Image (tube, rainbow, N blue to C red; front, top):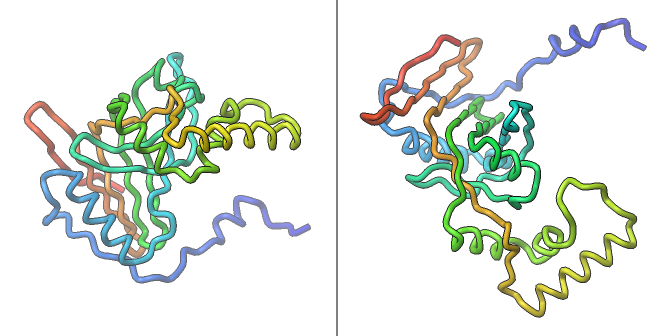
Length: 218
C-alpha cells in the first residue's frame, strides 16, 4: 500500500489541459435563461458529454437533504423542467418542501450552472408527453415497481416488467397517474467558469422588478 494519504492523492490530481471558452460577463444578457441557452448551444458544439445530466437537490419538511442525478428535460420561460413519479422519494420531498436546487457541470468546458427556486407540477399534458416520449422499456420499468424500494429477485423483476410491457402493448398511451413533469421556477441562477487558475462567477437574482446580476468572489 502506498504511504500517500488520500488527501494528498486528491491534491495531486491535475485538471485536463484543454482550451476553455471565454466568459465576457460585461456582455451577459439581462435574463439568465438567455445566457443558459447560449451556454447550452456552446456545449452542444463542443460535444460535451451528457450535458443534460444534472443534480437535483431536495429536502424533507424537516430539512433532511438528498440529491441525485437525472435529466434536464426542457428550459422555457417558466423555468427548468424534469420528471419523476410523484410517489418516488424526490416527489414526496417536493410535496413536503416544494423548493429545490439544480446543478449542471460541464467538465469539458470548465463550466457549472447552479439554479434554485420553487418547484411545482406542470400541466398534465406535459407529464403525459414526457412519459410517452420514453423508451418502451423505460416506461415498463417505471410502471413495474415502486421506485427506491427493495428490489425483489430477478425472476420476479422479469415478471413484473413483462406484465408492464404487456400493459403498454395493449394501451400504448397509458401514463401512470403520478408521473409528473415538474418545473423549477428560478429565483437564483449562477454561472461559474473556470479560467486558468482563476474562477468567474456571475449570479442572477430575481426581484419584483425583474432580474439583476452581479459578479461574486471565487
